[in-house]
Structures are given as structure tokens and as C-alpha cells.
Amino acid sequence: MSEHSTAAGHPTDAATEAFLAHRNLLFTVAYEILGSAADAEDVLQETWLRWVGVDLPTVRDHRAYLVRIGTRQALGRLRTLARRRESYVGPWLPEPLLTAPDVAEDVELAESVSMAMLLVLETLAPTERAVFVLREVFGLEYGEIAEAVDKSQAAVRQIAHRARAHVAARRPRGAVSAVDARRAVEAFHRAVGTGDLRALLALLAPDVVLVGDGGGVVRATPAPVVGAELVAGLLCRITRRAVSLRAEQVNGRPALVVRLDGEVDTVLALRLDEGLVTGLYAVRNPQKLSRMTRETVLSR
Image 1 (tube, rainbow, N blue to C red):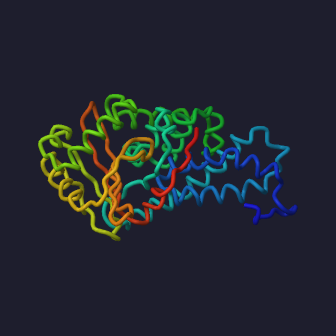
Image 2 (cartoon, helix red, strand yellow):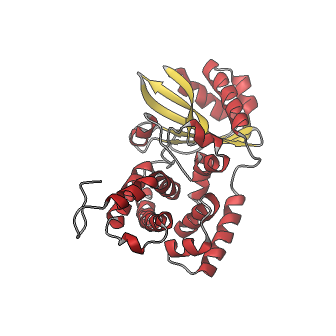
């Protein structure tokens, strides 16, 4: 960041210090709005470039101001991404993140960055998504959100109400604790790793859906696979060739990571509804797996 400069010269230490203090928060906001770590990093750079041009003594709340800049940049990028995803080869899934155990301990944060929730957020309009994330996950006041999305407070309240109802109708049913999630994934891991079809079928909901994302770069299911027997058979074939199958913390929840020749080949995240696996998300696109080699710090 020290390479950037403002009209007055180099960025002040105060600007750098404030930005670094909130960097993890800004990344988390951008990631939840975009579902892409690479694009979230780009948003951070754009936020920084605008932040160093701000007259800091006039800013009362650095956190709120930075979130406002970051949200506006993320919204602009989200609209661009929507057009890009129209030409994406096969199903699109969020970019998985290897996360530290403390993310799982924050139940609300873990749910908000889970694959299942990010896919629910994908069904919201851009402004609805930003408002929902800022209000429900980060607890911003309506006035702060209104400035970030350039709407009136009354409009933001209506958008928030609409987004909450939309998400509530689609989010996983039944709260899953970190302990329950870990136990479910451990049982799933054993069943898949040993090829125990009967045990696997007992864990899968009858209408379970498996979605694969290869991005046209590697092979993946070209369309969602529906039904416990079909999904179980596919899982056994996928993992039969795996050199390594491990349970790791991905997006705040336990997930299975398949490695071939020491390299991450597939990240398999689970959606749990009332104790059963109702969704499986297999990310295979190599361009989305770079964040699986080091932990990403997330923050509220």
C-alpha cells in the first residue's frame, strides 16, 4: 500500500493504520456481497485508493466510512460479475475459503459465509444483498446503510424487510451447531471414505442436490444431480480416485477436501437441514481453489 500516493504526497500513517485495522472486516463485507475472494481483494484495493484521498480529520467514524466506500465498490463490481456469470460454463459456486476455527465459533458469522447461505444471497438483487449483509451480519444502523447504498432510510428499511423474508424462506431449516455440523461431516467422511453406500444413503435427504463447478476448466457435473441414490453413486466414484480425503474448516463450516498428488482437487461443502444433507457443493475450478492453501481471516 505504501506504493500509492495522494495529491498531497504519500498516504499518512493514520490512513494506513485505520485501513489495516478494518481490513479483515472490509474483506468479509466484500466477500459476502460478491462470493468471490479474488474480487473482494480487488474491492479492497479500490477502497484503499479512495480512502487515501479522504481528508481524515473530517471523518468522524473511520469504520463506517470505510464500509461505505467498500460497499459501493462491491456493488459496482457485483453488477459487472452478474454479466460475466451469464457466460460462465456450467453451474457457478462461490469461491471456498480455508478458515480458522474461530470463525466457526462465531455462529452468525459462520452461517453468513457458509456455502449454503452465499448461494441463498445469490438469489437477491444486488442492493438487497448489500442491505441484508450490512444489517443482518454486521449490524449497521439504517442510516449508515442508506449512505452506503445511496438510498433513503425508509427505502432501506423496506429493502431489509423484503430481503429478510426472502432469505428466511430459503435458508437451511433448523439451526446447526458447530458440534452437530462437525459430527455430521465426520459421519459423512467415514461413509464416503469407506464407500459405505448404506451409511451414506442414511445421511442424505431423499431429494439431496449435488452441484459441481468446474468452470469449463476441469470436468464437473454439467447440471445439478438430484436424488440420494444418484448422488451417493457419484460421490463414491469421485472419492475412489482420491489420494487424500480430509475434513477441514471451509467458510466457517466443516467440509471435505479432496487432494490428488498433494494438490487440492475438489472442495465439497455440505448443506444440512434438520440433520440431513440436502445440498452438496463441489468446487473443482482450479481458479477458485487458491484460498485453500492458507487460512483467510474473517471478521465482523
